[in-house]
Length: 205
Image 1 (cartoon, rainbow, N blue to C red):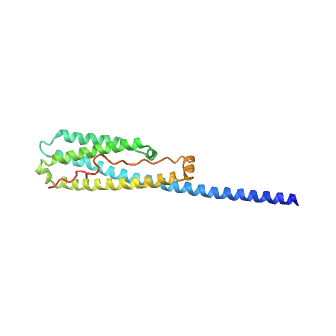
Image 2 (image 1 turned 90 degrees about the horizontal axis):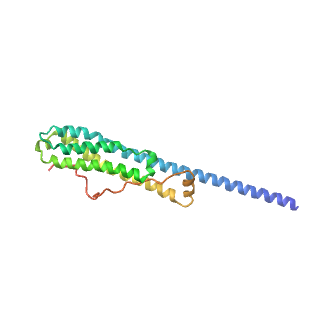
Image 3 (image 1 turned 90 degrees about the vertical axis):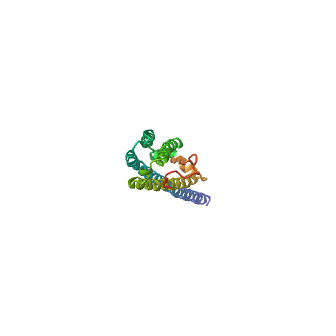
C-alpha cells in the first residue's frame, strides 16, 4: 500500500513539474515574442526617422543650386550648408546601434548641425528679394518646412516606440528573459538645445 502511495506521489510530483515547465515555456515564449514585436516597432520607427532625414538631405542640393543663382550670394553660408550635409550623410545608425546612446547622439548632433546651417542660410536669404520671389526657391522652402515638421513627428514616434519597448523589458521577470536573450535598452532622441523654439525655415514676410 505504501509503495503504491509512493508511486502515486511520484506521478503527481512529475505531473506538477511537467505542468510547471509547460507553463514556464509558454510564458517565456510569450514574453520573448512580445519583446521581439516591440523591438521591431522601434526599428520600424527608426526607419521612418531615417526616411524623413533623407528627404531633407535630398532637398539640400536643389536648394543650394537655386540659391547659388543669386548674384553675390554669401559663399561662406553655402559652404557651411554643403559641409554640414556631408557630415550628416556620413554618420549612419544601424538597427544594432539603437541601443547605443552615443551613436544616436552623434547622429543627432550631425543632423542638428545641418538644421543650424539651413536656418542660417534662410536668414541670409532675407537680404535677397529676387531670391525670395523665386518660385523654385519658394517651393523648396515649403518642402523644407514640411520636412522639418515630419522630422519632429517621426522623432516623437520613435521615442514613444522606444519607451514602450524599454518599459516592457524592465518589468519584473521580463528582465530575465530580456537579459537572457540579449534585448538591449533602446536609446532616445534627446531634446535639442533651444528645442522650445520652432526651426527657422519659413521666412516669407
